[in-house]
Picture 1 (cartoon, helix red, strand yellow):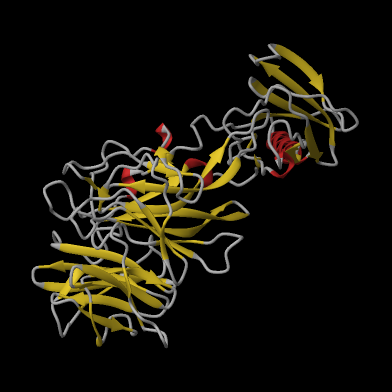
Picture 2: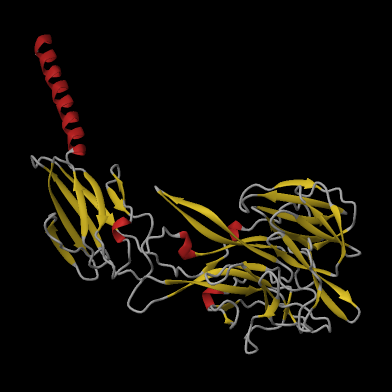
Length: 471
């Protein structure tokens, strides 16, 4: 063969290779599925048509990153498809499904044929000239874990904010829109602050003009409060930089309500309710004999549609006669009253936490649950000195209590504590183009059965709230 003939042959090979690459590129674009989504079906879950599906063109896979609720029946699902302009047809093949064991049919935008997504599903697209095909694997994901489990993941555990060694005392509180953590360690007092509990805490060492009762630390809308060892109330309105003597002496800080701090002090054989700043004409009133004067839970605020002012609630504690109580008390801005009924299943506890949260009730015949405000009581020490490891719940604003269902109970690796603090804070969650607000429980510190401070910060959340809210 001459050089000219060989050159002509090589040129022809190069032209053929170029043509093949062009056709390969064309095959990738002429068989595209552009958009996939499920049709609305309220019997499965509301908002099905808004569930986002990812189309991975490189791997030829279609799937929903945000799974459908546990129990969703995906054996008869109608779909919508948007196809490239050069796609001639889509063949659907289902094997090993609950209903479709081995079925093949073609997609048509004018029909409502359902697909059994419990099996293996493939969509085969064919180009308009029928020269190219592509096989997509399609998966409709459904959650396999119970969404109403209150989870406390071990990987999310952190040390107490501001603690660098084993703390001797600690307390976390909220003041306005910020969170403060006060720890005593090695004779010094460290104050950490953040606007987001899961974010970075900025820590400083305090220079206090008094020796504080660390576990009296509380925050109102605009100030931080501490009792000294002799009971003098001090306030700081500049994030702990300076502290001012308030001119009152209390035995216990009950908690804060909006712009004031609530306290109690001994008056002979009885105790009186007090508040600071005292409004004009305010006179401290005698506390009910059943009211706890120490070791009650930190108060938590509840807002109800029928109330003008939020209600503060607290649980447990020790009365003036030394009895440990199981009562839940409420405060409406002027008056304290016992809320819980005498038949309450709550045990008498000192140092428990009271948490306003949520639970979800399954509705017969629907996968769409009913969201209910739910109060939780965790931790604390029983009147016999043993640690409480049971979570209790109330669905009627603290009147009636029962032992919480299994999915509310704390995991075995959770150290039983008394004197802990629990705060609920919203966190913005993002998945793809969707963002939503998810309330987390942050559970700080407390003391173990031997009295030592537990250097733990936990994050608790329902599985359900981590899902994209499509129902």
